[in-house]
Amino acid sequence: MSETLQKQIKASEMDPKFKYEIAKMHGGEKLMRCFQCGTCTSDCPVARFSETYRPRQIIRMAQLGLRERILNSDTLWLCASCFTCTDRCPQDVEVASVIRVLRNLAAEKGIVPQVFKEQASNILELGYAYKIPELRIKKRESLGLPPLPKGNPESIRKTLRGVGFLKYCEKQGG
Amino acid sequence: MAENKYLIFLGCAIPYRVSAYEISARKVLQKLGVELVEMPEFNCCGLPLDPVSHEMMLILAARNLALAEQKGLNILTLCPGCAGTLKKVNKMLKEDKALREEINHHLKEAGLEFKGTVETKHIMQVLIEDVGLEKIKEAVVKPLTMLQVAEHNGCHILRPKEVIGFDDPEDPKTLKTLVEATGAICLDYMDETECCGAPSVGVSDKIALQLARDKLNHIKMVDAQAMITICPFCHIMYDTNELRIEKMFNETYGIPVLHYTQLLGLAMGIPPEELAFSDLRVDASKVLEQVMEGEK
Image (tube, rainbow over all chains, first blue to last red; front, side, top):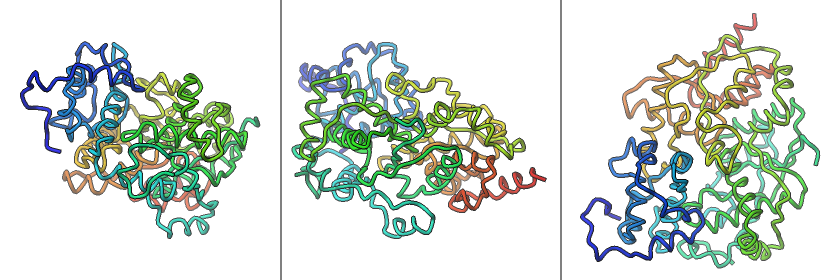
């Protein structure tokens, strides 16, 4: 995933249907309301420390239908999901949720940082996003804590049957 | 439903590396008359997977909610991320019949059904709404008047406002009120509601640590003796990573990061060794000494 957001835009890259596709998904409904005021970017904690992450820019690119550019961009994964942009948008665009919709679309194509694949695999295998060391689980008793919920990974896998993203994980649903 | 009886939801981060929060929370809640019931079948709340599959997040969260419904008990979480996720999914599925049916189709595979009959509360919400400030103040036997601290809320207990609807995200008051109930002075500082950066760890550690550093700088500037958190992820960012940030950016902080439940526990007269102070990475002994001296 090389950084793809900054290059010059060509008309042939634009897919006018893309915004409607996003608007059909949970959280993407209000994408078209954005009038580019920039409140999201100026309030974004990540944008303060990133040279490339600008939520306003991603929203505009989504409106323009620059599908491949967005979905192949590393920058998309920098959002910390703090929801400040969503809360402060004067047009009620759920900015953080639109970004999540875009990430979901990238993930469907397998474009996803390794950390998420690991967490998904852990949940399918153990019920938790992290591999909690045996030592920690045993130590709970000496600390006076009740046993750690074992979860029910088998039941989890059953409920997740048919979820598309799982094809990129080691352990799968069903 | 009995008012102060909850299923405790630990989530992933707490059993993974933040047991001091769990230990101190259980101690404090027990003393305040909040009964916690264990639920062996709970799994991850689903939030970590929202970025890659919203559907997967919905199913995982709904599964936990359906399990709680079977028990007929509301959920108490220590993690704002878990609270936010379970609250949000509960609301979404209650309001959207088509979505509920779709998710229930998945849950049926494991013999479960979401009905929308339980609520989820973060510990802070239980403390302020169910235990109540008066009862907390009554339980404070060693007011920490010698301490001045800075609080940090954590985003997911505040935002998105429309979903959480608990405190004002632009001017949150609950944690401050709870800190002041211990007798400690709660300081104002720049960018108080700014994100800790934890969700960016693993994608860009550098940006995440810069965010955490920014906050530590602001807190240092107002001479806070400690930072108070109510989120396991925020705690990892400031406590576990403080030394790393000091080295990386050539800074010196030495600011201990306490779970709110540790602070409250001290004020309630619970001995520090029962509140897992030794689990903290940043040495909190100066704060403890001051609290003990204050007793005399």
